[in-house]
Image (tube, rainbow over all chains, first blue to last red; front, side):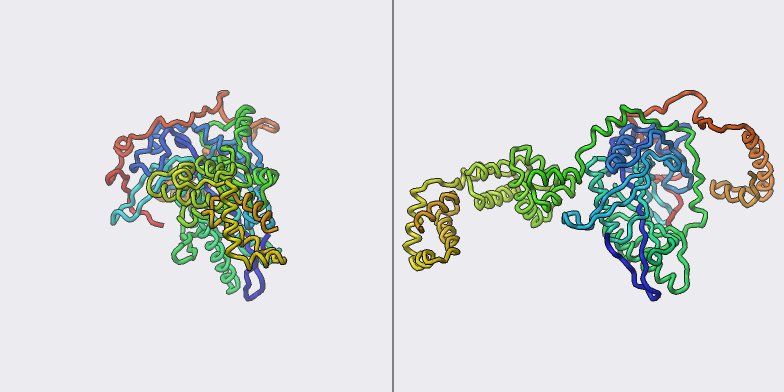
Length: 493
Length: 95
């Protein structure tokens, strides 16, 4: 898709990237216990004796977490494994009370699939590339450590311990930081559409482990490093750029890349080795004897499939078929929240073209100015639909609609939004179809601009716009533009 | 399959079990005895037989996604060797 090459002293290098994305599954309770997954609670309050790994506690899987993983798999056209199993990944760390993480190594719930990405999802002509997905498995999250509260102790909060994660593992099909960014964006968009993860990287609901290696174009794969827990798309792209360059410099100066785990430091924009002991990765996996295999039946799979929403690519094609431009369709479907907002607007009876144009120019423009996202929009689809309805039925003109929208935003900012129809009523902004009044204004304008009338009649067609503008101004923007046009044509000849 | 002393020491280290040199020597013999005993199973021809996952025909039970547990902070912390406020306290671990 994109030719990304690093220029070294010995020629060009290409970069091979694979991503392991950890996505928190949207659920009320944890993967193996009935504790809440709610964010921001008092430390160790969302913890059961199961999560704290007290002796004798047994895990019981949450059906919803498995269901969301299967639905996610279906959304990327992946193989769904009707038989899967949980394994123990053994290691010691203070945030892991069990001494092992329950994960799925040998038999993941979701097998191979793929995601089609584009470098610019808002440009319908941007080239696309398919990135293979190797697997999706379900596993437990660990607790949280705080190191800066005490001189000799670290503090442990187990609220996250046992929260369900999906690990989504890509094939090493990604060959530039830009492609990696596009992949993560598309994956996040799919997860949000499916509703299996909120995709909120700032709160840690989604984070990526980035595998990077370099090689001469078409050559043997190089040794890879894994940069852990990168929590934004921008940081991930910076980490790849830095890490690939570091590996090229290392190899060209006679060194060798060591397979190791690294950390990205966003302040210094560099990765550094975690210097773990060489056997830290000896996880001694084995099937978890506390859990029977997961067997999915037809009814379960059927329900998963039936509950899948329309996905971004299908939605985009449908919008184009509705008559939207390819650009509008691409922008409206790139993020689930935009598409859902737009569809709420349509559900209120707004015309698709009118609605999409207004959403993309007026609403996005206003939100941009306020520095807000669509989720934080002070105006909801119902209120917007009322405004657009007034334009559609000729009650107000498009330019008056802009004024009304401004007032709606101002009143919203003051605490209580005023409805479009109430604003039109109060300010007397109704469009007039009173031909007599319009004709009177036109007559005045023609008298005051005799020179322009002559010019127009001698062939200067462009002046027509001038007369429309003057008339509209004289009518304070409230005249029906169609009537102005008709009347002007008649009198100007 | 058999283990040597290095392997025994490595497994002990990974499991955070402290064993003396003498114990390691003893463990090599014991573990190899166990492994040899289990390896007798290799004599059985299992061609074409599905691996068994449980001795009784049981299905995995699943839970509905509702909050039924938690909010037992004091119980969870009751046996902690060290605690500070609502947290467990552990010797400082920084990577």
